[in-house]
Image 1: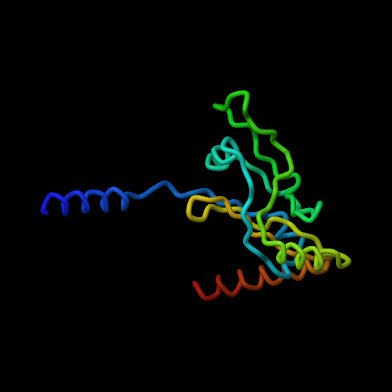
Image 2 (image 1 turned 90 degrees about the vertical axis):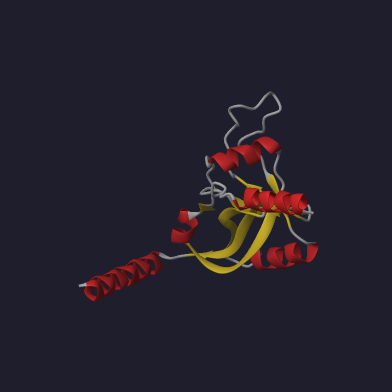
Length: 166
């Protein structure tokens, strides 16, 4: 009985060892150019070499967008470079990737995205319980004066923070 307890404690200690943090990727360009109206967490269908490349942190989601095709949602222009240690089974860097959503969610998002001036872009990409998740956002393009207003608000906040810290 004492031996079983020792084995359980050793296994618990082994699980408690800190892992390296999984990378997460923000779409800074989208944050700058678009106003987020709503968002939704989605899964994405990837191959093994794509996961390994994502764990290395060498992807680009700045040019990516979502498109509805044949009743399914696809992520286009997501650049995941070729895995260097891969074999001839390596993936294509810019292939369309299927987003994993329920049919009702796809229908609702497609209806909203069909409105004039709205589009679907990946806002954030991260790991959750060992799986890659994408925060897909329904966005509206910002006008030049909206960007100026954001910059002005950021400057005001910075000035307030400086005056408080003195």
